[in-house]
Image (cartoon, rainbow, N blue to C red; front, side, top):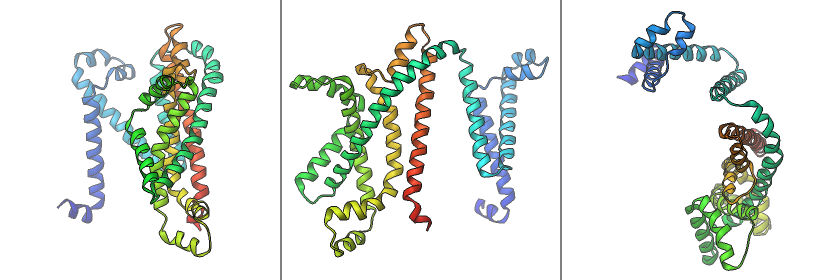
Length: 323
């Protein structure tokens, strides 16, 4: 019956769906105890009544906010797609900044510390992340080829490696490498320990991504390359991998962004990266939230830069699909 309604009366079904969504949003806002105090500041004389009728006030507030969201949706839909995206980003960013502003932050303290946070923390974070990305990519490529090998020994080594480093938490891996290697006579400093842990951990995850990407290429491509006289290595690096990159890049880009953020875990062994400095600098004047918010914004900006680079690389390897 519902399917017949949608087919015979699509406009009515659409309006019914929109109404249902609005009811669900209003119900969710009311359940989350949305405040009605802001209505009192907008409508003079209603503050006392709203305080005495809290449930009704919250219900009115939920309905008003839902209507505002619906009108905003309609207004954005009138714009071209590019402007819609820009509008959504601007609105959500303003809401985020308003949320942060409600914390009563000390912007003078942020301005005093942000320079050191960038010059020392960002530099160290990017240094660790860049080296880890290169090493993890090399490990992943070698691991993927090993998992596709018919040699049982090589395949066993690759599967054991991926199972171990995907099965252990990254924080535990950092501790084991930093504290465990000295037990067998190899003393390692904090930065190399962090790089090793990130490289091995994300190399294991990316091994599966590379393997899936390579296997997505039809076997006929390899057979055609062999028929042309190419060696197995030439076939892999000149024929298979360039085509597999279209499948490999999107999830690999996500892993790089995750690695950038997970580099904050190396702070537990005393590396002066962004998270470590944010925590220690905030302790000086008990301004923890200021430093944590500043660090989070820096991580976000670096992630946006990686997202942009990923999109450009995807565009580069996806050109053949547009021809």
